[in-house]
Structure formats: C-alpha cells, structure tokens
Amino acid sequence: MERGNDTQISEFLLLGLLEEPELQPLLFGLFLSMYLITVFGNLLIILAVGSDSHLHTPMYFFLANLSFVDICFTSTTIPKMLQNTQTQSKVITYKGCITQIYFLIVFAVLDVLLLSVMAYDRYVAICYPLHYTVIMNPRLCGLLVLVSWIMCVLNSLLQSLMILRLSFCREVEIPHFFCELHQMIQLACSDTFLNDMVLYVSTVLLAGGPLAGILYSYSKIIFSIHRISSAQGKYKAFSTCASHLSVVSLFYCTVLGVYLSSAATQNYQTSAVASVMYTVVTPMLNPFIYSLRNRDIKRALMRFFRRTALKGTIVLVSKKCP
Image (cartoon, rainbow, N blue to C red; front, side, top):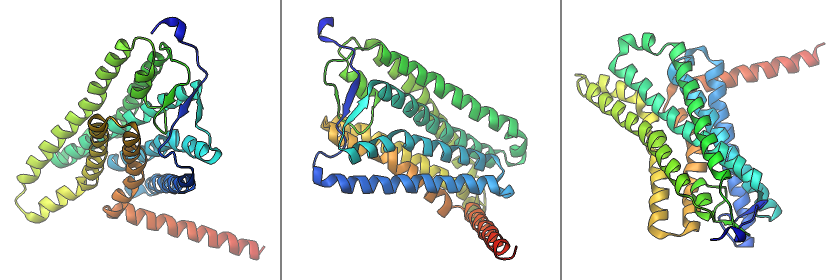
C-alpha cells in the first residue's frame, strides 16, 4: 500500500467479545466479578506470605511475586474493557494502545519466567534437599526475580518501539478486547517483516526457553521421586510441586489452545473468547490452586484472619472504653 493512503491515527477500535447490546450488562458483571476475585485472591496470597514468618522461604517468595504479577496482568486489560462496556464505547487511543501492549508484554513474559524460576526452585528442593538453603539463598532469589524483571522490561520496550515504526490505515479495528501485539502487526499498512522476526525470536527465547527449563526441571524431579523407595516419601516429594505443576499446565495449555484454535478457525472472535482463559481465568484460578492444595497457605490465611479479627475487636473495645 502506498504511503499516501497511510495516516498518523490517534485511536483504535476494540471490537470486544460480543456485539449484542443486550448481552453487554451480563458481560460487564461477569468480568467485573472475575477481576475482583483475581485481585482479592492474589492479594490474600501476598498478605499471607508477607505476614507469616513460616512462609518466608524461596518458594513462597516466588509465589508472592507471581500473585503480584497476576494482579498487574489482569489490571492491564480488564479495567479498560469494563470501561468500554459500561460506556458503550470501543475507542482506545493510540498512546493507550501502545501503553497497554507494553505492560501486557511485561507481565505476560514475567509470568512465564517466574513459573520457570519456581520450577528450578522445586528442582533444587527435591533433587538437592541438603543443599537447598545454601543454593536458594536470599541473594540468589532476589537476583532471579530482578533479572526476570529486567529481561521483561527490555523485551517489552523493544516490542513497543517496533510498533511505533509502523503506520496504520484509517479506521483500524482490533478484533479483540485488548491491544494484542500480533494482531496490531497484522493490521499495519507498512512492511512488518522486521517486527515479525523480532516477535518470533523473542517468543522462542522468552517462551520456549523457560518451557524447556520447566520440562528439564520436572524430568529431573520425576527421576528423583522415582528413586525414593517408600510410597509416603514419593507422595510427600510430589505434593511439594503439585500446585506449581497444575498452574504451569493450566497456563501453557490455555495459551497453546488459544493459538491452535485461532490458527484452525481463522475466526478472530473465537480467538478473543479463547484468550480470556489465559488473560483472566488462569490468574483467577491460581490463588485457589495454591491455597486449596497447600496446607501452609491455608494455615497462614487462618492466622492472618484471626489477627485481623483480634485487632478489630481491640479497636472497638478501646473506642467504647476511653
């Protein structure tokens, strides 16, 4: 397409999930409920880990970081979708779209990297239990999280700058409820070869690399568990990584399902609906998976609620008896 047909647009249109006006209130209520559950559930995990000294271990340190990232991940897309649904508007500004892409990439990739770091933590705990506290020391744990953040920020900055070099035609409609990087590249009127290559390389390195690390860690974990003689010992070893394995399976299966379904149907609305699984449902289910399958988290939450109730009682009594 010639340069004369391009324009520096100021806004995009997010087509959303459903076009039927009568279903918009139901959609708003559903996503508002899921968003509040996600924020509240992950916030409870963070409070439980931070307030209980028994949970000041590498595994729960990474879990608290994952919960924080999940809150940020959903907050990047859902509030704007709720605003557009409530106001019956599909508009998102050009700057708003670029900003959304930037933070979406940061927290999506950070999710993947933290899951791989948590897999390494379980690998060390099960395969080298006697050296666990020496290997997974606070300095290394902090360094792993810091490096993950730096990699995500730099990658997202690169992807966002690559988007800025593209030009778009008039009345650009994004068949999604948020600005998705791949679809933004497809909608561009200018040459996207460099963008496609950068996206492909970063996906292989920052998604395929951590997945390979997770698979390697769990292959070693399974081999170590298999060498344990007692059935009780095998169950205890496996139970320490069951929650993490469930979250990893849920995340990667939903992401894989989204892209397989979009490739098979070529229906953008189907792809948008499917993407709800990893952008909304997975972060919402993570706290339930970790709390329901983890006695330490449940005990920490019970102690946290007891302390909160006790403080509330003390405050009420002090007000009544000055």
